[in-house]
Length: 301
Image (cartoon, rainbow, N blue to C red; front, side, top):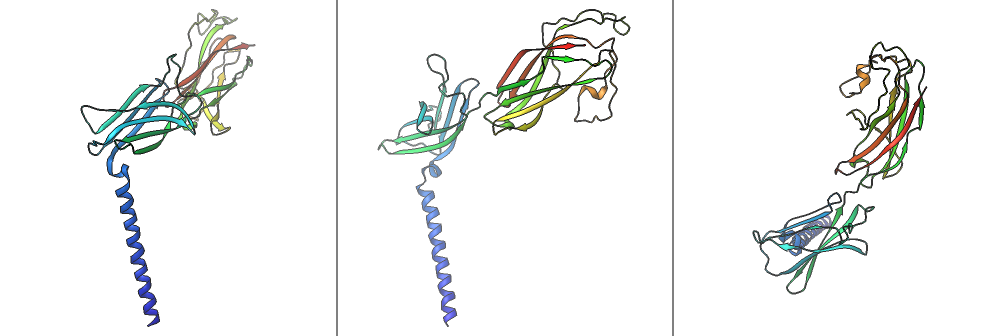
């Protein structure tokens, strides 16, 4: 009998708390303005064209809304304020589209912050307020912090050499947001070969170019992270020796390795000396980029 009473009491408690939790959930849903009234809410901000767009759609037309305003802030610092407009074609929709530039065409939002608080305040005719709080992630341009390219490089007489390049990049939107780190080369002055031209009839002519050249394989490899926002990228470039020796296919190529060494390098009359310029370009997945050009390197014998 005692055990029976205990079991009965346990069942009653379970039923009671179950009903209590269900009533709480239902009560929360009934009292939650967003759950019962908001169909869609989204915000987007671009640092590339300095625009902010906010979209708010209700499930039904609400006649008791006095105004909908918003602000972009971090902690207690407010950087930007705006007012949303009710759309004539759809009275359930409120939008905002605007430039985040001041009268001097300077951006309102600092360029070194990528995470903001977006606060949208729905003010009703009785002056009560419902607040929507969202994180607003701003694409921030990557920044080339450091470039390690030697000012001079000496060719070997007969053996191919490796030229090591290193770039350190800062991206507040983290490493996954970096699309590529690449380089371009301008052959500012490459001296003609001081030998009899056998392979190329013009080998004794200097090469002087005004434009950078590039190739889809001239991409740096991600090496490591120094922090959550600073990353190291490395690249090795094969440099031809003075005697112009070719470099045969090395037998390590596959479908994923589309580097030029897969096809080997043909022999030439000489390995050229002179001046080249590098351009380093970092592009992120938001289309923002940073670049540094006119990085001079002398190739010597």
